[in-house]
Length: 335
Ligand SMILES: NC(=O)c1ccc[n+]([C@@H]2O[C@H](COP(=O)([O-])OP(=O)(O)OC[C@H]3O[C@@H](n4cnc5c(N)ncnc54)[C@H](OP(=O)(O)O)[C@@H]3O)[C@@H](O)[C@H]2O)c1
View 1 (cartoon, protein in one colour):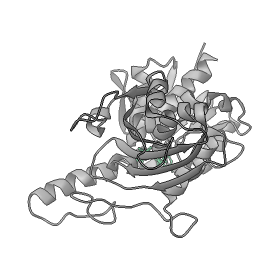
View 2: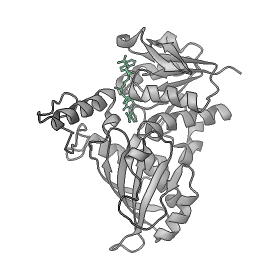
View 3: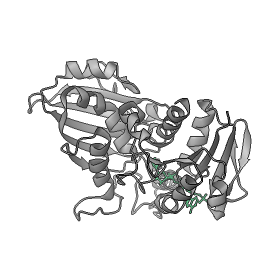
View 4: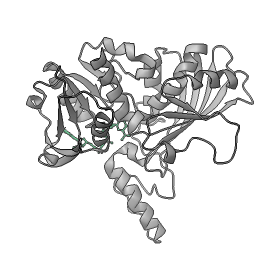
């Protein structure tokens, strides 16, 4: 059976990871099309030991496409995803364009794959990277004891902002090491040797767009609008791998021991199941280039009985973006 896949944004950091993921997981595509903007037409991206020539992402490029994996930003997605869907493709979109749309399911396969069945617009949204890793870890705990309130602080890598941001962190780090003042074009200042809150402001004036995404997307994926979510999102000088410190309260008390039992069996999770020791915890450098969501530092809260604290780390380009999208595609193709 033929299965034609288009990767829109194939020259970007997530698009390239999508191509690698399709290849490594031996996704049964009979044809893969690499699409991007006019800027990259004619360039080449590596795939299956060879190269794909990048073509223009336009309506005709989706003729005959079964699955369109989008990672080209919200503006391109708003314009092109409906055109791809109109031509019969199932769109799996990595941008924020469709996540809040009630007619577009927001899917993390380990948590709510069933939601993908109902897709009246032919578009399935891939959640924000920081939300994906959090719900992979909290989903099984929610199923057991119902989450009441989550307080989360993120430590987000530069690659979460795309390839230009990754390059800028590397340049800034060299500049700082040589005693020069780091130059900032992508970030609103130096990320090297520093922490930034660099997201756009959200619809509430005191909150960043990233923080509000974590609130709304967590509720939508877990199917419970009553869950309280209090995020603070922070960019850290790490190239790849987002980390999160999470405090979770439940409707019925949950112990760290019960949580560890659940997390040991949770799909997509690797549990660091040992007492505290310096340096023995999930780390972004170790998570980078791997598929799992790493969970460690699972602790009973000292002040709130029945509440937990966890440390959650994952590769933002893989489980936070490309892998999650390809896993959705695999489940669609597998029936
Ligand atoms: N980075 C992450 O960790 C992450 C995680 C989750 C979701 N996402 C989302 O994934 C998307 C891509 O992010 P990224 O980090 O890969 O960014 P990136 O490295 O800057 O790449 C952007 C890609 O989008 C393409 N593009 C831009 N405008 C386009 C247009 N009008 N038509 C077709 N292609 C267009 C670019 O093509 P050209 O080469 O032609 O410019 C490039 O391939 C964003 O929506 C982002 O929010 C990223």
